[in-house]
Image (cartoon, rainbow, N blue to C red; front, top):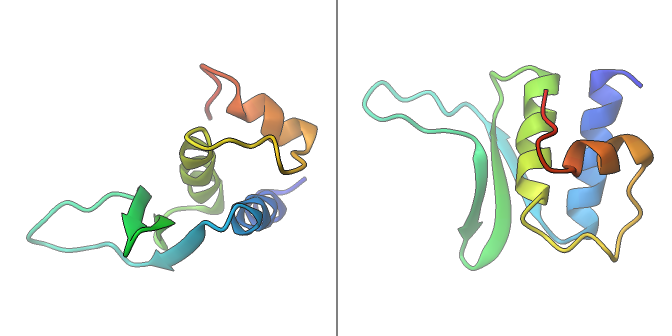
Length: 89
C-alpha cells in the first residue's frame, strides 16, 4: 500500500473515532508549532503540518491514535502493527 493510501486509511479511522483532522501550514517565524493531537473546543483534533510528507503525516496520526481506545474500529493489520509499543518509522 502506498503512503497516500495509508494516510487516507488513517484519516478514515480517525473519522470513525470522531477525531477531526486539520491540515495546514504550521510555519510561523515567531513560534515553533508541531503537528499532533490536541482538543479544540473540547473536541479531539489532530493538527497536521501540510509541509510534511504523506508518510510523516501518517506517523503523526498513528502517534495520536495510540492515545485512544481503538477496540470499536476495525484496524488493518499494518495499522495494528504500527500501533504496538516501540513501532515507528
